[in-house]
Image (tube, rainbow, N blue to C red):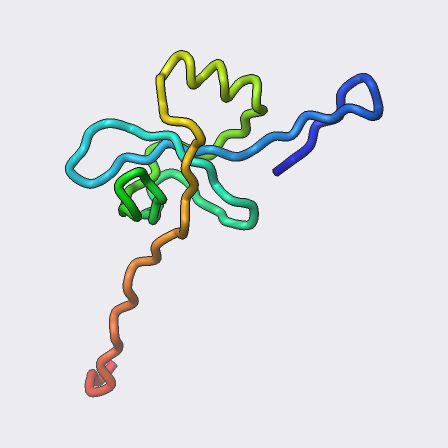
Length: 104
């Protein structure tokens, strides 16, 4: 979460990071929050917390920051469920095992 300071030095705006994710076998894009410390970019495979449980998906946008006011306006426009669910983890591709018998 980043903070932007207003003109009044005591007030600040909290920004959370979000990304759009498309699940397997579904063309619809869903909005998810990216927790602090997790780096997800376009094309990454992610594990998402959804209403139906944990689901695998693919990031179809770059991360963007929104404050609560912008998030509420976006919710009215797109109609997503409240509260916004979070990305659980970034999934890494399984590493190929190296065959030690290869001559090179």
